[in-house]
Length: 341
Ligand SMILES: C[S@@+](CC[C@H](N)C(=O)[O-])C[C@H]1O[C@@H](n2cnc3c(N)ncnc32)[C@H](O)[C@@H]1O
Image (cartoon, rainbow, N blue to C red; front, side):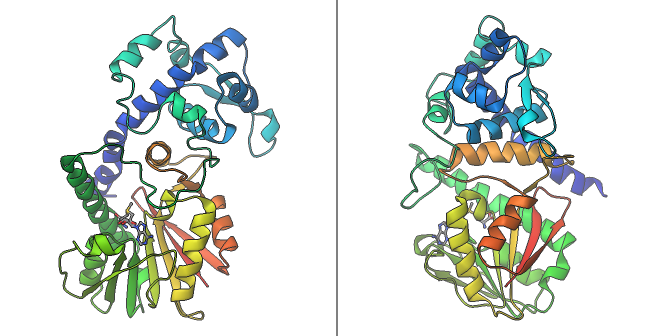
């Protein structure tokens, strides 16, 4: 594998470095290292959840991320006997108690209230647990952002689209053979579908996003911008692409989106191409660290979004009525899931 492709994977470690700090800060605030230290022996998820007052589902995601990074240790085998799983201190987590280095790390993480989207208070209130009320509209937590931050966020989306689409073109060109018309649902300003049409010139592209987003999108050769709401209907095409969309939403909202995408493609020949992370919880692979850090970002930045395992993707696609799907991994943090009606 060439150095450039490896660098495209490694850069996520720096991009998500801040998430490690943010999550470590939350667990110190929750008092998790102190609870384990005072208990004196490993504790189950349910014991930890009641001790720190944070729902099990979100605490599971946080511990999955932290154990991967050597902060806390997971004991037992979750596949063979989930009830046997418990969590223990490591030399690193022992340093994070309040009477050790905990206050030092808290201070370095910045004053309370200045951490984007996630604090111990948020977690105790149910953040990341899927238990919060369904949001009415926007799911991205942007807080009180100014125009400069908003501009940076738009640039971040374009930068993501460029990096991921380059990987798709390099590692998954076969997914685009035989597609006459492709609609990119939630395609923002059309960066991804514009690159795909250039690489695979037999495709006519539609960039579909909220009306206010496509109104600002620049004209792109071979691309029609269409405004609308993916929860109501999706433009008809041979194939639909959903890149970095579903991880923003709860399972039930993903199923609604997927059903609309399925309706938009021909039942015999159509497909939905999902470009998202696929977490490997068991063995772990070279991308697992970035996937789990991304899960923490999504937990902080959305109401009910999450990164998913292959099993969870299969459950969503089954529930939305797809007959089969394949998953292709790339040298990138996303994989390509092709789902057939
Ligand atoms: C995280 S961005 C992903 C952008 C792009 N696909 C990428 O991978 O970089 C999510 C996109 O979904 C769009 N979106 C959110 N709600 C939508 C809706 N109800 N209908 C259509 N698009 C929507 C947003 O405007 C935004 O452009």
